[in-house]
Amino acid sequence: MKKTMFATGALLLSLVAIGSAKSWEIVVDANTKAGNVTLPAGNYNVKLSNNQATFVSETGKTFTVPVKVSNGTAKYGATEVKTAKQGDTHVIQAIDLSGTTEELQFSE
Image 1 (cartoon, rainbow, N blue to C red):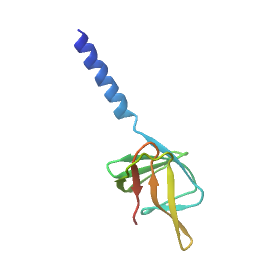
Image 2 (cartoon, rainbow, N blue to C red):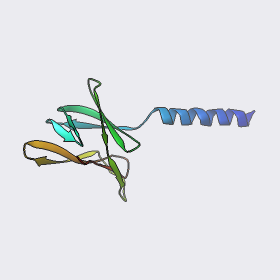
Image 3 (cartoon, rainbow, N blue to C red):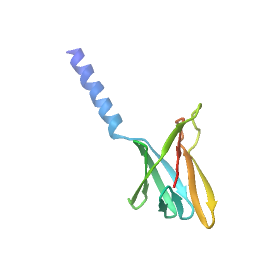
Image 4 (cartoon, rainbow, N blue to C red):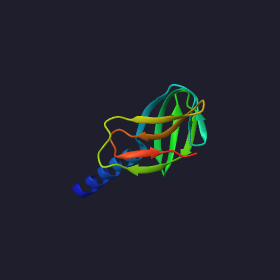
């Protein structure tokens, strides 16, 4: 009986973990390119799945961009968006994900 309850509890915990994918909040101050899409200025939740970054705006609009995920040696203390300016366009080059060693790298 105890084994069945333990197995059921472990299954429920794994389903909760799968159903609640981690996301990170970022703010884009101006229209900014991320890969091949342009994100309008605003607040976004970023989710990572299978080398795809999905940006979800406050209005629920989603933008999905392929990324390369590289791993550092230490966990990042904060989510940091690294941008560059190309002409008049702001471009996201990378995002460090807080609480992880992962950095999302963007290309065009």
